[in-house]
Length: 387
Image 1: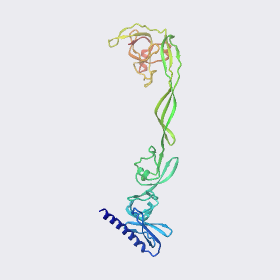
Image 2 (image 1 turned 180 degrees about the vertical axis):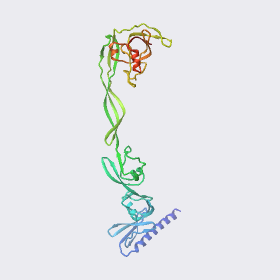
Image 3 (image 1 turned 90 degrees about the horizontal axis):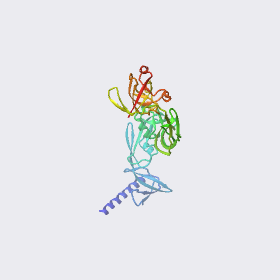
Image 4 (image 1 turned 60 degrees about the horizontal axis):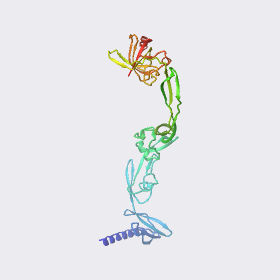
């Protein structure tokens, strides 16, 4: 079976050579001619004729000349089918070698001024290739600090970007959606977006720590330890739009030098307090235990909605101002006048003020209205510290 198959292949090659020779012999001008079958693995020259070279299709094959003096080597090359697609239809042409431009010539198609071809004209053809001719329009493109006209195909903006020489980065910003139609726009603006990883050294601010001290006079302070700022190395991903910084995000932080907190002693020496633990009865008739009670002058104040207190929380009814050296921030309190005529009730120490730090009052009770403050006035109070 192998011997018969080989005989058939030999016969087929011989027939191709004879047919090629027949075409060449039809011409009137003589030349030395070698016919080479590119399907022959040995690449041997089959036969030599004296005749003129003809460029004719031979059952879908084509003869291509490579002139070498008087000797001309001929290759039998299989023609390729190429489709040329336009808005009006599709043409199929057969061509052995060449470029897109050669295929257009074979299809007898000439590009109009408002048309472009893809792939571009100098692209080598291949079997099954599809050549697209697009109807186009000229739009104004603003990018990279330049303004220029670009002939682009009709369709979506996304198609325009794919088929034109205009390049768009993954993060670049368009002035219109990629789904917009080219026919609906006249100008397209592109903002180039880039990212850079950068490192900077930043300060770590020291904190101020306050502690009550019986060795310091009431109303005075003393710095026990000076504060020192620390340092940290911060890695950031920085975003640039057309070369200008537009945002950043922190990727990592590394402490290079730890900060040293500033320690301040708050004087409470001579503070007027009764350190007698006991109980009181609140306005609901409940008996409540307290750890100590502070007696002194009480006042009232108000502030606009949203105003912040010394501890950072918004002022509210039940949040009162104190001298934190005497009554620490966060202390739970119960406040009533010493004669029992006014009961402010339960409260929390969240704020402070000049009169409180000066010692002219021991508590300033917050009310929502100025009228309530006037009604409270200034009066002697008992401030029970609960817990």
